[in-house]
Image 1 (tube, one colour):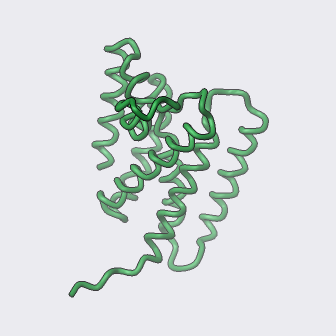
Image 2 (cartoon, helix red, strand yellow; image 1 turned 90 degrees about the vertical axis):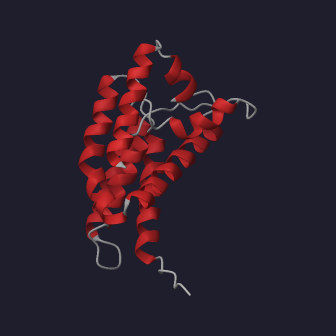
Length: 181
């Protein structure tokens, strides 16, 4: 699943170059538009596959390829795919509701989801100290950037990704297996 996601992101980047940005604008970044536009629903999930340029792609994919495989091994391909799809949906929806005039693209919310998930995965019960440290450093950095850094980085959506990863990690740790009859 991790390699498939990587290859889809790479394909989206290649399509961006081949179509002079058309595919990124219409398929791989999310922004508020008419609910009657069928491409809106593709963008709502597909924005995590798009990247602004090679540097943006590499900065996300290097972390994704380091953190993703151990998380896929621990949680399984399908649960991790569900976490990615949920994070894409939540961040896309919040982007449209809270930042209507701004487009969002990139897998950084997914990467931050994996970072928080990873910080929880070593725990044997309760809240791991490593998770608290990662959360404090991560949230502090993102809040600082929101308040004091002027750039095109969607720091709020990084926080959303981190919250999704934390929720998925706790849900996975505390969900009781269903008994089959």
